[in-house]
Amino acid sequence: MSNLIKRAHKPCGTRSVQADLQSDCYEKRICNPQPEQMRRDSGGLQIPLLNAAGLQIRPNRHNRLKRHGVVRGMLLVLALWTMGIQAQPQPTNLIPMPAEYSVRSGSVAQGEVASLREKVRISEKALLRRLKGRKLADWQLKSAYWLELRRRRVRIVAADEEGVFYARQTLRMMASVDSSLTCCTILDWPRFRYRGVMLDESRHFQGKDFVLKQLEMMALLKMNRFHFHLVDNPGWRVQIDAYPQLTQLTAWRPEAFFWDWEKNETGGPFVEEGTSGAYGGYYTKQDVADILAFADERHIEVIPEIEMPGHNYETRAAYPELACSLPNGGRDPWELCPGKENTFEFLEKVLLEIFDLFPSKYIHIGGDEARKNNWKICPDCQARMKAEGLKSAEELQSYMIRRMERFAHEHGKRIIGWDEILQGGLAPDATVMSWHGTEAGLQAVREGHDVIFTPTHYCYLDYHQDPAQFRPVGRYLPLEKVYSFEPMAEGVSEADAHHVLGLQGNLWTEHVQDAWHAEMMLYPRVFAIAETGWSQAERKDWPDFERRASVLSSVARTWGYTVYPPSQQK
Image (cartoon, rainbow, N blue to C red; front, side, top):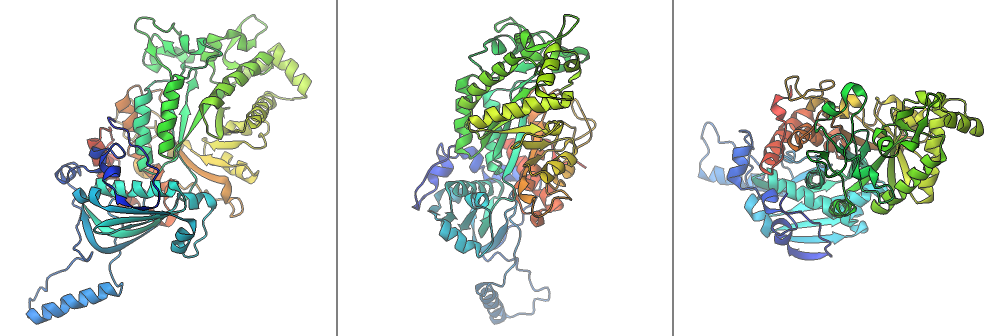
């Protein structure tokens, strides 16, 4: 994006929203696409426009009414409107669907939205009055808002600045996807507290501008967690001062495409930074600071992931002494050695720098797909197991995860791990990211742990949307399948429901090299993740969502996003 949209901290009071919708606070071309452009890019979809009363008046087909009868009929319509007896259409094209929506008299042309007067009131008591006894959790109340759109003004009531921000995102989307905005009242709050997207930047590196662009769309969709997968076998992507070789060497490789580099699943070589023709890159600490500032303005928490003990081919390449020493004199190419004390020294120094960079209360420590075979023959691992009374390689991994969890707690952090961290016993305060399916998540919930659901068959956005698409991989995962996912899985009791934090869409990039390809895999399926995370279950409606996703997809293309056509996802 050429202009970055900023969140303004505004006191209560009345003001023009011109500054919000047309200055650097809201990029003009995003918030206010021209009506003729909207019609051109909507894929031919005709959006019915209501009259000033929000009603469709059908002519009398027999034409028997005389003029005084017509007047009486008009007065009757007006009387019914005044009494509140009116049609209740859905919000035309909003994603995600709000909890409650009611039509008011009148409409606002798209080009007039910027001149509306805005009145904001941040008051929990005022919001509770509008909720009329509905019971919301504290985190829901913080995000909730009441919005009233009239012909000449907008009123917003929220308990926190976060709610004001989401109200403005609703108005912004309405002004983007509707050529005429029906005057309305919206009362809205999120269903789940965690509404996330994960981007794998190790296998293919996109860089800061790409990340900022995706955060912008996430904010519009009211998504609030960005999982930053920064390190993995093919490259280390974040500056660590204590270990400079991680970026001077293992952030660069001779082949650009992942599968040209990782031949026969053995991994390829790395090259020094500055080598002619090298592919790669990494985030400097200033890059991270820029991303975090941008995300914070949009109420998005950025959660970094530092993999351990598996997926560490790049770490072993930079610092081979961290791998298991094998009886044959070789070293384990994939995993860190949990038997060596210098492994924990390395991880703690890395995490201290990560903790200083990222203010998130969470650190994702991976924990998945550790092979563990060489631990059974590594003298250091065997000595550790004997000293700690551990009976299996799974218990040795659990020892490592628990130890790193204690370290994270000492610095005010909580850990998240993929569902393999359940093996050998789960760390007491760990949050599980359930990816193999839902069973591991259900087990964690029953044991009293928080869970984020991201099952492969619903939420893995690297899976193909069309068998004929560019570089298809994995199973077929169309938009409708993503939309059908229900995070509150069968088997979660009412008492345990608070442990289900939400859901996340994951974009792994083994087969996704270019920015346009990454966006094509994300959109429109991220729209479905967003609506499932925010909207109340009873408000979801696949046929209507498909229509709204088509409209938003067309608009997103005018903003410079590459979007896979929903109409082809059958």
